[in-house]
Amino acid sequence: MSYYQGIADYYDLLMDGGYYNHELLATAIRSAIGQRKRILELGIGTGQMAKALLQLEPTYDFVGIDFSSEMIRIAKKRLSNSIPIIECDVAEMNLDYKFDAAISSGGTWVIIQSNNELLLGTHLFNKENDFRGLQNVANHLERGGLLLLSVHPPHEDRDLELTNGIIYSQRMGKYNGGSDHFFLKKTYSFWKQESLLAEETLTLGFYRDTVFLKMLADVGFNPLGMTNSEKFFVLEKVA
Image (cartoon, rainbow, N blue to C red; front, side, top):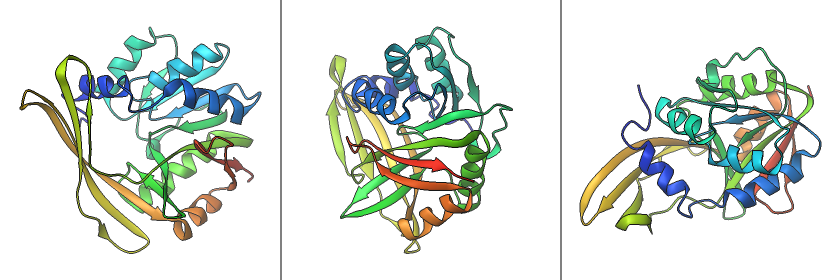
């Protein structure tokens, strides 16, 4: 299955159009990881975060992964093939290399801050894949390495005007599943003068903290909490 097929160029336009402040997020990452240099980005997307981070600190030994060949095509062009970008599923990842920090900024996993509750959001499709993916990340980190997950408000319907008269629209479906692990469908669409340019619907998963903190502990992560900016939730590999 090819993810973001036919939508990646518009998605890149969205990422460049105010959906995220990449420079602000890159500054928060650099502050959180300190002197750590070997960095793995989980879900590099179209490379905007990687570019912002490498502009702040060009000496990072940086590798990005993504499961979308379309996203990787754009990321390689943006970064002029200056870093390794690997097409793989994090649940199957085997890079034969150890990192000091792994970052998911709107990527494979995120933290949703909702009504004084934290949820783990995921682009993977079942608990087995999430557990294997988190175990793989832990296996690719040195002891004392950090996992940074970006923090977001709850998903909601929204529209955003981009360049050239293009309108981005996101629409959320209804939650389904159990009380501790549930799903919703998120539809991305791009319009111009009432003509649909591109659209894709993804299924997103969510875990309540009673579940995801145990999952992370089981693969060797200890939560350190939010960064001062509250842009990232930080975990340390302790086992």
